[in-house]
Image 1 (tube, rainbow, N blue to C red):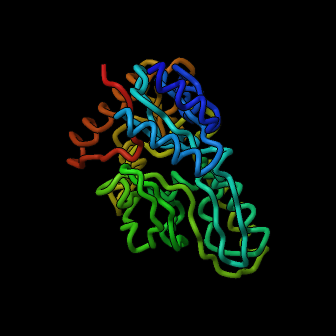
Image 2: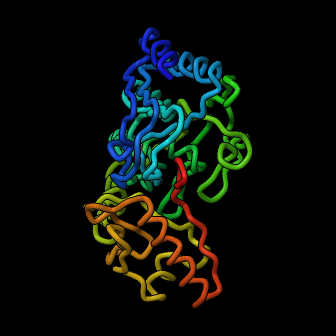
Length: 303
């Protein structure tokens, strides 16, 4: 591993850390160390890093702002690439917008609304980045990323780069090609918006933001929605009807505000969260014969 660290350090590809706790980089504030942690300074830096990673046959993982993730208490083997400041480029060319993977989804929605462009109002308050949002087809309030994406620039596991159209991304509910069939990293994306009424767009965004503030526990560390909605039923309603709101295991608690959120009350561990998730799944199935599927992604070493 020292040899790899030396190689990467000499390349000057951005921030490079050893044994960096992932709790510092997830919205749940949970997660053990990554053997190697890289915050690349550019797309080219990612390509250079990936060459070293592949040459040394190291496992690797990409994160954005760390929402929708639960990282093992034992940490992650190999390399974690965090797409942040080095990939936060933004080019607004009329209603066509190119954004780097590290661009905040909230900031992007604000920028777009100021221009009077419609289509991203649903993202107001979603604490993620463009790369992660496209990767998992993030959505809310009846819309998602597939409604506005035109193309995504993807780096695949074998080191090849390709622009994929919306159709080639094979979007479905909270998922894409990159999760189901062909693993890859979203480096940047091109979106197509529509001209709209600026005041109406701002109002919709504020309403969405207020709704989140009033109904979701973003004042505490959490990972967003834990379960996929088994539509037309909503997971939060099932959890509530099962009498589980407020239930705790260790430092993990089902939010009293919303049944589809688990919060870290201060000293929560990934093991606590996993145990609580399993308890919810078992209870909901026993009461309603509905098998809840997790939306949050668990990564890292197993005990």
